[in-house]
Length: 187
Image 1 (cartoon, rainbow, N blue to C red):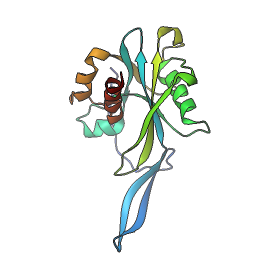
Image 2: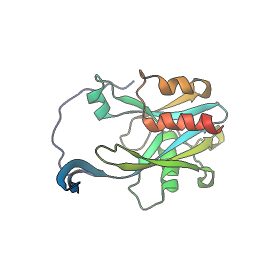
Image 3: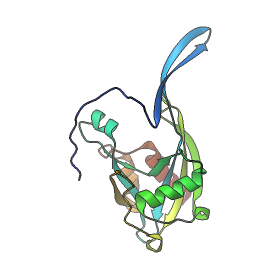
Image 4: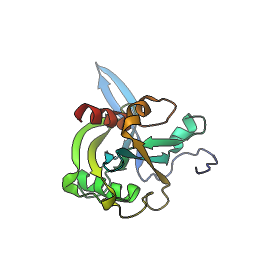
């Protein structure tokens, strides 16, 4: 496990991916203001490894979780990414599977599950959820992300997935929990 040392909290200057905004609106004749963040929509994928009978998850350090969760900021998540390029969401998730997990998954085998809103209280971004099956013949490199990402791969055996999804001692995302239950409802 990586060592994290907390340094400081500073105001955000020249943001790359999120932009704090104030939304002025009128509700029932009363003027109101809502603090929000304008940011990118995203994609995520539940990867099922057919040979291991396991889901391939990523474990990643998330600084906001670190601040809120007693200095433990690593979360279990689906492979995911933001929609910040001029390619469609399926192509984006294919690239994320390659970068984060090291598998080359054909676009035509990636199945759309649904989409939903995340962080509705402060950003209202939309995430599209996908499903894909993988095996070792698709493995092209070790994964772990690009540039300075520090992503660890984690294989979750299918027979442990329901308990894992509801274990609140394990920091995880709602998309991961939903995807696991979608898998059991449809398979």
